[in-house]
Length: 501
Image 1 (cartoon, one colour):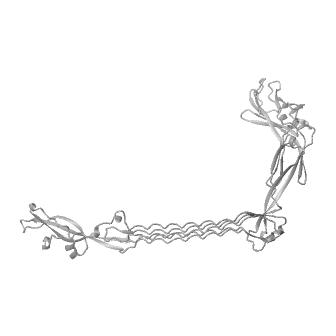
Image 2 (tube, rainbow, N blue to C red; image 1 turned 90 degrees about the horizontal axis):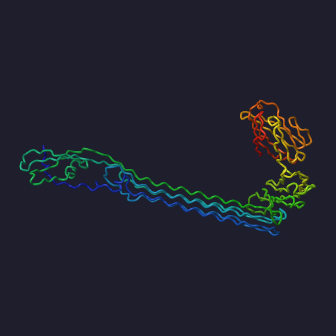
Image 3 (cartoon, rainbow, N blue to C red; image 1 turned 180 degrees about the horizontal axis):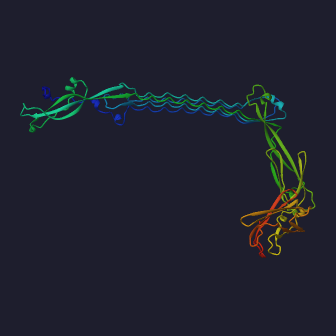
């Protein structure tokens, strides 16, 4: 049965809080987030002390070459609070407040300046008692403080309920006022949940029919149909900024002490030919800075330096080349020699191995005495002289065109014979003073080789020979040369393929 209040057509408009703010339409955050604070400016580095030179003085001296302290870093700027934080009311979604900005980090403290480095020239270490020295590095600046973060938007209502009531629209002909109301449609309408208030204040808009339709409408309240609970959370506060790192202290200055009034000029190496430098001394000089301790005990009281210092040590060497042989320079190739003071201060002498020489040392002077040798062009003079009877693969001859054995310490001949699958090696050592070893017959500069029996020397087998000759000079240096060739066992090969290396 439809009650009489259904005839009331006057409806109150919807409340304004049903309109969604723009920020909520973009998500679930209300308000504007605070901006992060700016970091603090880093501190400037302290000025380093100047390097300098100190000369010996009989009067007391006070010298300050310390480094300056580094500048403190600036504090960070605080983060901004979130703004426009009025919380929307009655909205149909959960809310989160805008966050506050993070605090800015503190600036890094400036590093301290280094202490200056000084060179001190004295005739005696005892004179250092007249000197008070400050070479301390400056302290590092303090790091700036990190700033506080801004506040997020706070909630004024952490939870709320939203109600929807159901209404039914009825209609009937205007000309038949006694006829029954007929249901036309149903709809949900935002309401308060208070039946009395909702019935009269939250009706749907009235439906007005055209006069020619001969129809009238009315709404009927059917009570609360849906209850929804929503929540709001305050915006997060910005994180505090990190504190700035403190600056590093400056390094203490280095003290170098020179006993004397100057640092000798260095000459570490030289290279000359004997013809240009014979009997002419070559002077070499190398400076070393030796680490020492005990500086604080040597300087005047109140000095602020490291206890470690460097003291100059100079190493010198004199080399005199001496040509003690009847052979002239050109007959031995007039080679160059090289002398050097190495990193340990030891004298190194490099002489070509074709010369016979010895070193005669007395104090700082070393005599480089050449007593003989050979011309470099005489090395590598071996040539292949052919197989015996043209096809005997075990017997062949070599000839030394420069007749060099008498001028050598020794000569080694190494022969490798290969058929491509297996290889055998034969080695012989010869000197001018001893008989030739078994397997070689030497007549003047002709060397006849007879290799021992081997399965390699089977008729028809193609063999590859690699003959390497090492000529060892009297100075002990070996000079290699040699040749490769091919031969088929028991086959006449008047001119076998031959290649020298």
